[in-house]
Image (tube, rainbow, N blue to C red; front, side, top):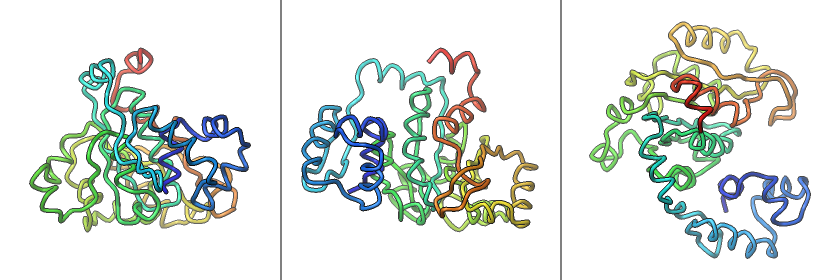
Length: 265
């Protein structure tokens, strides 16, 4: 059961709280355990199917997103012509990439997902594909993917390449020009703007090696969105917490879309 995808599909934690008539601590417990209580499953199943999601009944896995309405189809046809290639790296904040994708779509972007092997330890390609309505790419050596799209074409099709979360490891590899998977290869092949939303332990963020990598990436034109100070997943407090998805999405769209067009949405 991918609770992160379910929560995102139903509009966030607050929406789940209202749906199940529980408090925030209960939702946190569900996420920690990785499953819902039995009484909640039929409620969640009904809510998801009502929204048009195709759901596997035994484990509530999202198989496909809702079909587009005529209004959504028209919106998808325009989208200011802006396409965001969302790279999800392998950190605990990877689950927030799902909400980031949803926020980007609400601001009028086409979103295509790319996941590293590490990211798949936290969320599934199917979850991201169901939310974006487009295939999620996760392998540099997939013959099928190369035949359908090709990593060079994938890299060149975007107006913005956005990395959420950008871990210390991912930024180090990007700075070194390493291209040993689909995500890092795209960074070298793209001609689009690149933005990253860092997320890591405060000590890792402040480390001289990380700061060197960030300074080097910025010199090459990579935009950094955050991080901010606050509680991090490891329990420590300080700078290194990833910005919230709505903040990331708004900052990303400001890089590629005129401000008045964003406000119009």
